[in-house]
Length: 230
Image 1 (cartoon, rainbow, N blue to C red):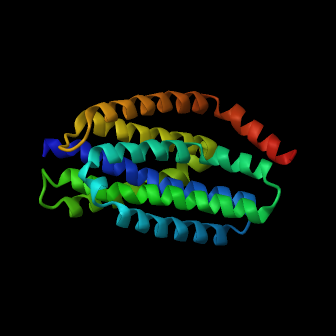
Image 2 (cartoon, helix red, strand yellow; image 1 turned 45 degrees about the vertical axis):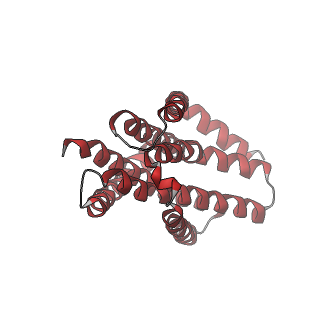
């Protein structure tokens, strides 16, 4: 049971991050393109479809090196997810055509969704050696993490911190999930040297995102000014 506690924590965190990205992306797109109901519907639909593709692709060599693969996924999500609101603002600033902007940002939603879809199969694979009910346990904790994320976004992140800070914090959580797997989870077919390099990058990203988070008010003002003056 003790061996599974780090994986339960990681599962909760990545589920929290997954739903948080859906909500952040939906709200950000509605701010840029209007029509909140349409943006949330399309965002969640695309995201869920992309997660399905990610889950289907997570097999073979990818799951054989489950720990290493998971760390790579968390690293990518930290980059794309943590900076997604900033990316949207700069895309809006540099791309004048609304159709092109819409295409690119929806493509980014698919990328984040596919990356998120890899997580659950990899967590199940890591848990198989220690539990015969890996799928049920992972899914149970996953649903709980998503529920908590919905409350945190509605009552804290969006009204109190804003979308920019919310994305930075969620990216930090992704990086910490990868680091927790590196330090606490044992796996058979993974290369320690490769994972150590990934862990260094994740640690650096945590520091970068923390710096941005501490200066999020200034960053938010700059982003809004650039958007209004484009």
